[in-house]
View 1 (tube, helix red, strand yellow):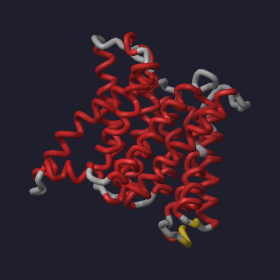
View 2 (tube, one colour; view 1 turned 135 degrees about the vertical axis):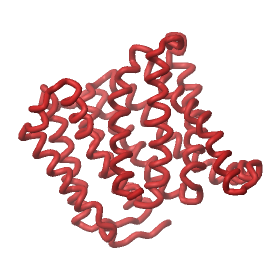
View 3 (cartoon, rainbow, N blue to C red; view 1 turned 90 degrees about the vertical axis):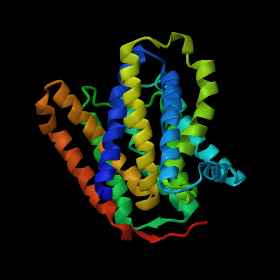
View 4 (spheres, rainbow, N blue to C red; view 1 turned 120 degrees about the vertical axis):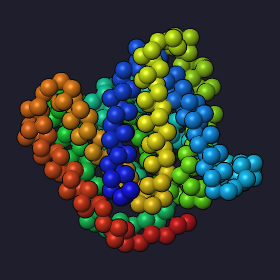
Length: 308
């Protein structure tokens, strides 16, 4: 499938995660939900990985040994998964001290953070046109967010600094996949992220996730958690692993600028608020985001890149 379509699919699935996760609060705490998502994804990924190896004529035991024989690789994936888990924990903690609007606005800074990390760590020097694209992307997505919320003001809350740090961890997570994840395919790489993510999340959820309050017998719990597991965890991780190693972390992160747009479109359709899609602020924000993606998409935008 064309990389551009995969990038839009990844962004759409990310947007659906924000939407559907809101329905899980009545069934389980965010930490418990995250732990269950990782564990279920791991259980589903394991047989898929084994079948893939079998069809390729590879010995399953040998492949598992190869995955875990390198201490450096284990340390790398421990850090990759730790950064992702740190983002989730930071998000849930910050939401107790700030608003969803604030976190949504700050989330749009993640691509810029990714560019900065890639420049310092991977020595990737983007052209000025590409830098302009990332700046415009953040501006455009912020305009979309503020245009689609009734309270179009933004002040600084106590949880905003915490979430800013969590955003940096997510940007580091994606760039670290580009740096360390090229030796594994999409399926094995996603499996390792889920495995070590579960290792990080399980004790955190057991201590602070209010596991005893999870509504295990509710149909709503299982229907929602299965969607989050299959589509917004399992599929997005595989897509991310593939896209980061083919188009690069910066371009993948750039498509997160479209997440507020997808959320706004869903809200307009679900609440029959069609006029929101023709609001001047929304149209302006979408136009700026599209212009930003055009500026960023040119692979020649990186004028110097050196892996260190």
